[in-house]
Image (tube, rainbow over the protein chains, first blue to last red):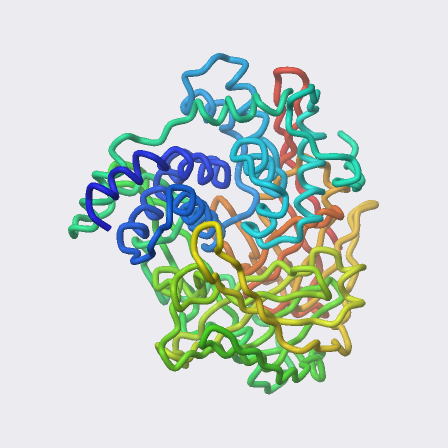
Length: 172
Length: 358
């Protein structure tokens, strides 16, 4: 990939790559390392991208693979979640609180929630990305949403009851 | 909370602006400037340290089996692998993974099932050899993945013994996977360094079912997949072996702590998340033997990750598939240490716990 095209790709997609890595790893430094590795892989790749969206999906898939591929503890420490939100965002306190709440979810709920609500993927697309059945994605979305105590309003993305169709773990 | 608040929250997070420069410098031969501590990538250091967490002096009556030597041995890594991480200005963290000797206790005689199934696709051939599985739905299966034109796998991961492939690359396939019926299993593959080449990869797939009650009734298949087409026309193609009807499952033994059970087998340990409290996070898991020795499965503080699979099922169970076989008959207890995090309004409370199952 030519340098100019590479720089443009980084400019366009670095935040998405970083945010996905951050969702997995819950550590800014680790997420930064993954972003670096993903774009290094892009630089060395001879893949041909049809368009902006194709490149974006390639990067997302590679990011997920990078995060999943190495021996890593699936449940990471959560002690620093509050500080994490503070260090990541200059947004208002309410926005930081949302970030903290999502980051505090276990990984199996956190990842589908972010892919669905932030990146706008369908449950089928998430299933393919995560290599889990679509029904499992729906379960995790339903449970993750329950944990976040969503108050769904008109206009929000919502999983239909018959789409979820799954029991929800009671809050403790 | 509204769902669009999640989008708003994540869009408030920005990556570093010098990312492109750092990657370009690295591509030009400069060292990568790493900041984190969680991932063993290009800075991985392979070591052959003396094992200190072995199963001690347990006197095995052994099963002489090429399966156990392959699947539960060291995969050509020596007794352990060690990797370090840390940015140029940050603290260095060291992690270790210790391997077993590939020797099985006599109780596992007859546990290995010959599979001998194959599947081909995109120039690759996946041959499945032998497997063993327990009542927790966990185990390991040996395989060979070959391609006369070369197997396209991720070298940095292989340095630490893990096999990772990328199906979206031209001429590539994804890391082999496994199904119980229509359902995916959680899997991780290793590569046997001593017996693999650029065109033939010998490896082991460690697996855990997502729902043992559901999955253990079904036949098993193994899959490879790849991407055909580009852009909006891109499709993932997956091919599978014929079905394999699993024979006997290796027994598990139940240990208890108050009202909470733990199921242990030579291949896995299973605890129950619901019993621990939903917000429980584990930090250390230790198996104690009759002779006083200990097998550390996981120790966050020590950086010991002596497992292949560690996952949480939707049905409320925690699973570990350790790197060393567990001699269940010699186990006295299993100790799980961690902390529970509870939130009351704006306050989060951390309460350490230690649970001894015996």
